[in-house]
Image (cartoon, rainbow, N blue to C red):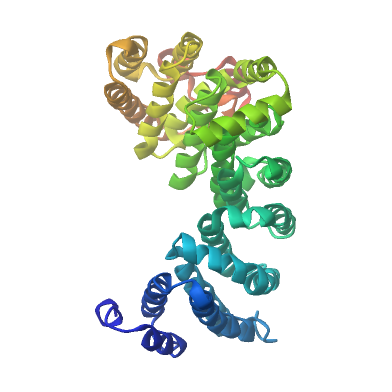
Length: 459
């Protein structure tokens, strides 16, 4: 459709837009995008741009209302599809607005769109694909109209938290993250952001109370830790003192075994971010972020208090995180995610307390089979000689050694599975109970607690 649409004028596009319901959704998106492009070129004088935008949006809102107010809305898929299509088309238009048309759109949003979309979101609860599309619309809207959205931040944060408490859809968590990243530098909404972050984080972590829950809700894990990463980077002083960091780390340690690549990526990125945050007072920042952090520190009190809390968290969780990384490499994390573990250690090498981490890494590696001794030695050698390598070269070396260790561990697991009386137990860290005939070879791999349990296991 694209080449044909490009040749049409505004009134022709608008007529096509109004009568495009029979076209495939992608063609309708092309029409909406083209119309938004034409509207951007209209003059503001005489409200030409405003009137054109309002006419275009009203067409979608009429169709949307007609479908979702039907008594059969929740029971007939075609009504849901019609609503979803209208939401997508409005979103497509929002994505293609410039600064001037965004300002005009902001007026229409508050008067016409928001009241209908508030009702729609309530009606859509439990229809996950539609909720996701509505939240996607709000994501692009807040990015598009920028500071015009400030007055809506607090009510939206409250709304998303309340809705998540009723129907825990991960898109609500994601939206809080987008709002926080976009508006954390504005003092007037910082309190609302703090409260919203704390409330929705506590709710999500409560849902992920054990490993089984983490297995059932990988989408919540991904968006929860996307929110944690954004907050740790943008509001570090608040984050370490909020009480959420401890809970998030504990939950991440539980979730590391979820067999989902997106979850593995997000959790390893979280560990990378949290270690960087705990070891470094503050990372690089834009002027706006720096100003926000300065104001945040003033509100929280002396910076020394924040650093003390960071030290406390590092002492409590640093070793657990390092052990979890190796445990993940030994089977919990997909093999092609090993490079993410290497990135965490590259980050560690930049900080003054790296020697503590090196010791923990060396101790953790003693727990694993001796078959990969060469790669373990090379890994530790690369860590200790990090200053002689560029970050990229260090990451490549660490990744190569970790991959080799992972292959040895995988081979060892297969060997264990081939023996009849192998027992797997999830204790503190990665543990396996193996026959006494193999204990002489793999004794250093097993904790004493593990060996004691093996003795009690019926043979």
